[in-house]
Image 1 (cartoon, rainbow, N blue to C red):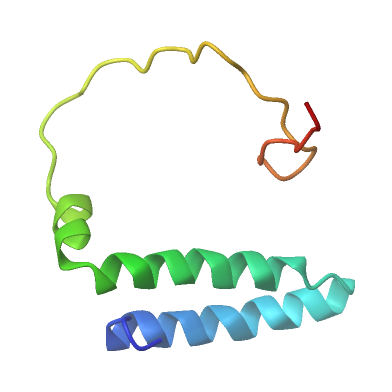
Image 2: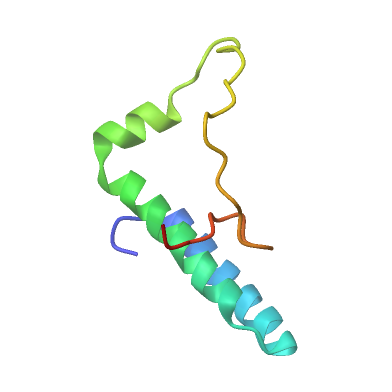
Length: 87
């Protein structure tokens, strides 16, 4: 929490408590790991002033369509993350 602004640290704490209560209710702690990963990335942005400037600047207009990638990786069900396979 060292690199988060005070308001963001408060938001993290509140979100952590809500998520902990919800995960305990369904006996699945995985969402806590996801929450902490997301907030770690947020802290990384705040720690890097150049990256923070790039990501928080106002962008004008539409930058056009995104091309379809040449390779489509299979996605692990329910995670949105690529499936790791031996090649």
